[in-house]
Length: 574
Image (cartoon, rainbow, N blue to C red; front, side):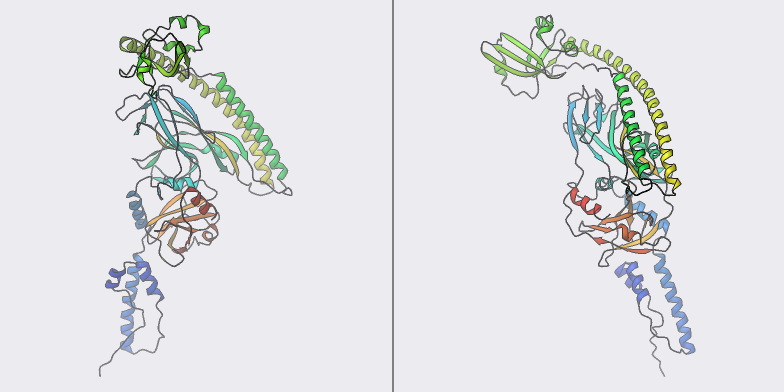
């Protein structure tokens, strides 16, 4: 008698056809594991043999599926390959949703100082730039720069914060970042060898101890090597300190108020001492490079000997008088649009008034007629060659004096900083002892700081301290509220107590450094360019001592039109 057996003791493992059809091992594994088991009944010997065979087959199929969940090494390889295939600096959103650049222009031969809105200062030396071929640049140069200070800035910029040092991975915690470029006629320029932009980057840092401000360095982003490059120690100056407000009933409220007052007084005294140094060691004035007549623009040639012999008749500085040498011509400023025919006549008198070190206002008189134009002193032929030789000799002397002043200033500044650092350390020790006496961790404090460094290249500069390598990672997969998988994209994680951002790759699984003892925010972008967020309260629920877990992300149903929208969505989720 033919027997028809239909065994459902073990649930059927997925076939090769199923695998090829779906290629979604997570979904197959879930379906396989969730298929209901039928009730067991008494089996005949033949049935038991077949059951054993089916169990073995199912066990092998389950092993096959589970081994296709990436191992640590496989995940690292996949994540590394993904990020290597992307631009090193990869803004995640449209270019219109970016931190805007500030722009200013100056004469390359003169250099200049630019003061930003929040107090940041850029001092650009004379003749600081060259083109791609190494030729020195003259004329107006356009500077574009922007500052980045928090995790939203880092996210929008797409700048990575991971740092590889001799094969050890660190995360950089930032005290402020600066991106700066120079252009002329739309073409990018370079900083000449031996020149540097002196930067005073104003920012804020959060620390648990006053002495933590010592641990910051300066790094430059090398996009070719795809890594941060250590440049120098950050010459950080604390300008102001902010403390969290304690309730009046708190047993250390008076101690904190006293510490804050003493620290503020100490910082003010330090700033005055540093300012006195700058005044005491005055910077030498740079010589002005002579300008050659371009051979095409209209020029005046008139005798200024009478003007120079009567100092009371003009308001020219010695620097400007040095420009008025034998053979000086007066070339119309490039921005002048006056009809040249109006100038080509005899004039009875003139008046010359300086506008800046390069530009002069020339007023011509003839009877009741009067005409004013902006002109520049220029030279040609041997007169220019001789003036250039004198300038180059003067520039060498200027550079020598500048280097000497820098050495003297550095020595005296280091002495002042060391003195106040010792005072601050003594004050901080008393403060820490007070908190230790009641066995309570002191609350974090914030410093307003000035990061001082020299930018020898154009590009991205970062004032940071390397954070210790993470101890352990949590394996997770991500779903949206409807159960849809969020894969093959970049995820972002921030710790509210650390000014950095961690990027991670989300494949069929992901590894990320979750710390349940702190508030951490996780987010990523959906295919529709919406934010998918896991808030700190939910992140704290992730079990760090278990296997792979599923994290459900909330979709923020609001348009992301600009930086303000991004900030509101992320900060409101903290």
